[in-house]
Image (cartoon, rainbow, N blue to C red; front, side):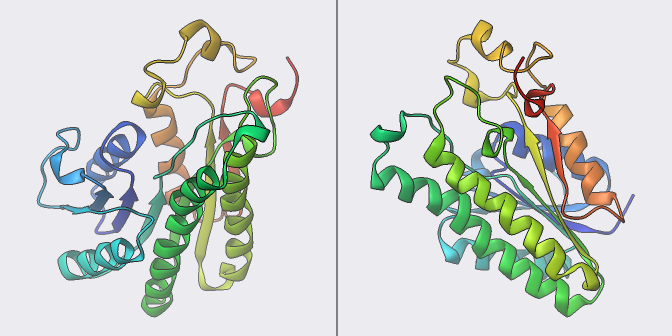
Length: 240
């Protein structure tokens, strides 16, 4: 058990809900946020749980999340940037509006909340952990998965994370990313199963629990920072 406090974004379902429950199991106080997190029944009730509805692309959401964490639990020790959107198109078919949608959630949402959390961690002077969910496609494309503009935003999170890790290593703030392959979540409920099972050299689809385990590991790992942990069945290794 622990008295630490973690913020989890995109927490209504899938990986986010799994993370919220796992952190509660570990004794953390959890601030869970998404557009309609107050309506989800995938996160179990707890006195150590606070829910904040809001669009992560809106700076006001980040402010409410941090204020809630401090008002309810008094500090912030960890952040998991799980919220994100993803869709594929041929490069020439992506529109400026597509890019703005992707950037607003994936990059601007990351910036709003991560900046606020780092400020609070610096005030606390006790370090902390930030883990963000990206994808191996950011620097290991797969033929037939046309995600170029989406990867401009996910790759941006990886670049930001490595640079932030270096900038605040001396203050004990660790910044890492987890890069899952295909995960069995509602995002893939309509995807052809045979196709997505073949998107890694180890055939199959990852369970939510595998990603949750990777995030928990990095959150608690005292000497790991600037790392990208792939949970993708070896897809990042190259051609298969």
